Length: 401
Image 1 (cartoon, rainbow, N blue to C red):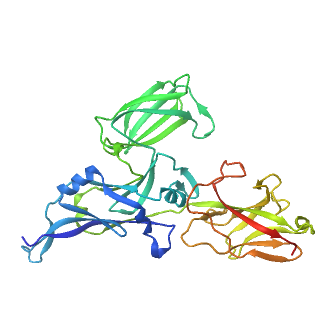
Image 2: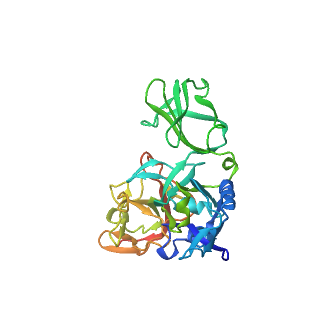
Image 3: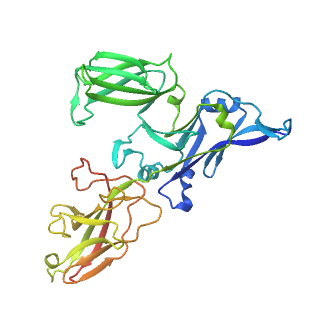
């Protein structure tokens, strides 16, 4: 046997669409990536080595050059067999507000959200040697093998309608095999909460799907995707990367580079332009109004109210000042005015004063902040409307053009 060497098994590259192409892996400065406890044992057993890289991670295996054949062959020092699963945990080590604000962890079908990311959820990225572009999904909860599952009934097709009658509950594994069924489950008459003891002690760790329907019907009132694992339930992380090999033989060809780009979040931008002083000698708001336009023509903006356009809002003020409210309404990936958060500032939005003539007030408007939270200062209806990134500006004085 020749000298021991390390050969690549696979690598992971994790980037973010917020950044310019030259900096796409900068998101990794905010993450720790570590093997799960089970994967750490698997790596040890297979004489493998996990290393962090500027792009993500690499897993290497100890190998040797077998010189016995006429053409020498690189062979693993310890060759694993059968099906294998590698799991890595991604933890946020700093700047959590920034990451949440600029990242889109929702799931989509086209432009439609099929599952919204929420508090307590875990992002799951799955890959195989035949699927190197990782597939995202959302885990509602990570639970130990025995726990009590509680939920409130809410109609999936009409999410504003609650339900507290009898339900039938089915629990299925990742291959959609039925594991448990419960019939005629009642809610607490005082709270409307359903309580269901679940014990997966005799089942494998992994993903399970819980679905509750109105008793005797197919009307869904609760759905959940959970990950059952005693060790993971005690861990702190926000994302799981799970790489599955149907055959260990695929591990030793050194060809797998798994990739995933975290999507950047896209929201409507809303500008609040407050005015300290309007020349009292002129009828400014009668003859003049404010407008935001995009010199590149990619986005359009509209004021609230739309008529009369570009005038102060009739009821909303900032610190007692007359305030014009203007929102992005068309353009962008969703075509409805949602603007992506990006590392490079957008410099094509300008504020103009229109009336007897056109005057540019600000040639390059400030962008939405990449930290903090969104708000809806106007308290406008929120049904089916994406959140707003609000930008507040104050002008000292306006005079007629």
